[in-house]
Amino acid sequence: MNTSHGTSVDPLERARLLERVHAAVLSGDESPHEPRPVIVESWRRSLEARIDPDLREPPLSFAAGRLADIRREHPLARWVPMLRQTLLDAADSTSHVMIITDADGNILWREGDPQVCHDADRVLLAEGTRWTESAIGTNAMGTTLATGAPVQIHSAEHLVRTYHSWTCAACPVRDPETGALLGAVDLSGPLHTMHPALLALVTAGARLVEGELRWRLHASDDLFRERNAHYLGESGRGAALLSPSGRIVASAPTAQFVPGQRVGLDDSGIVRLDNGEHAEVEPLEGGYLLRVPQRRAHRRPQLSLQLLGDGIPVATVDGARHELSLRHAEILALLAMHPSGLNAERLALLLHGEQGNPTTVRVEIHRIRNALGQDVVKTRPYRIAADLDSDLDALREALSRGDAEAALDHAGLLLPRSESTAIRAERDELLASLRGLALAARSPELLWRFANTDAGRDDLEVLEKARDLTAPDAPQRKVLEIRLRRLSEEEA
Image 1 (cartoon, helix red, strand yellow):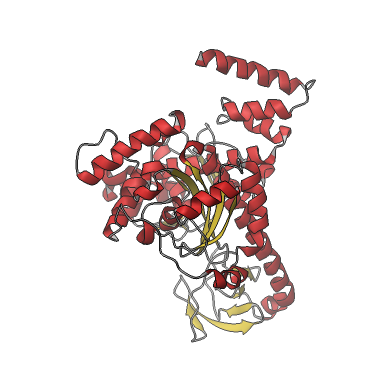
Image 2 (tube, rainbow, N blue to C red):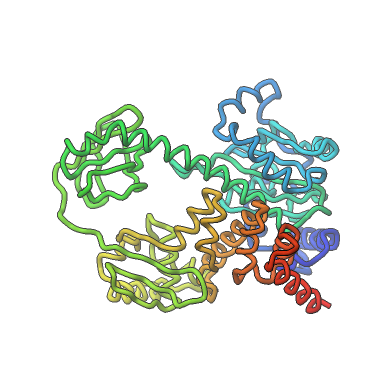
């Protein structure tokens, strides 16, 4: 079932249709609708894990007596009050419960209306239980941890029949230092409470936590740099400061290291860099000092990408402007989204799905390298080797910080003419996150700005909330009322 169906159909009507789809698919009969691809893949994983659709309840991971200690040690513990305020105050707290899991799918916190919590207890949607797909089948928490992407699961999209009366939306939370999953944030409730905005809301909540974690990480980096900057001057050009996980925090002014780049660490004290050189690593308080005896004198090109909005995509290399075809813009966007690189097969799959041809991708990469320069895009794997500055990265960074004002500065759809599945998914996630931040901010100025983007111009909920928050005598109020009246007349 396509997502577009779910946004316009009554939740109860949709649940009845999903029940028929669930029964048909599991019995091998012809289905009245194709399940969404994310559901098909999740059911496949769950059935391969031998999950019985008639399973009654999830396994218990630990007893209630251990819960306090486990919570205290978990990195999301300090952000529970912020998530409570963001999710339960923004959503209808009488219809939903907020759930926070660890990376293994164990529920650590569950809060919400007492009646909904009571109903959740009856199906063991409770603290201490494990909700991975391999434990209880398709569910928002388990599926978001399995895919690493936000997901909404409604009614009979759950594989296990016990949960067909529930709807849920979840988003993973990642450690900005290592990229590792920390857990998932979820809103669950009775199936009649389904609303497409729930997914944007939990995504915004997860991004707020990641933004706070990133802010704390930056503060720790600043202190580490301040204490150890003198080593960079003393160690010559090939020196860098590394975080405990091997992330480059700072480097000597002429060193060819990029902050955020990672160095593989082991116990030998010697690491091999991507360019084949060897470097020494010495421990410092709070990280490491990396020293390279010799370094190639080679300046990295500067690449700027403009990928958002309706205009022609543009790549600027060392000041030289190049207008991009849609296909070349898609390839560069995907490489920017995967800084560690992609092989031809993976890039073809992201561009064209199962029909993708790696040979065609190789030809297009060859053309991009001829146009932009051999040092801008490297091969084996294909990756951007230049110092990159893009409006896409600026928008993603602003969203990750939960900075609605900065995000709206870069508001624009990612390659709006692209039909690539991966580009469309990123475009939809960015839009959902931006919309969720704008709505959660409850600021008439921010809502007005979002309402004047292509995505927000005809967004009924955004327009109504912006109108309600705007002063009656403000000129924007009249414009919003005119738009709402037009939308009402069009729907009639």
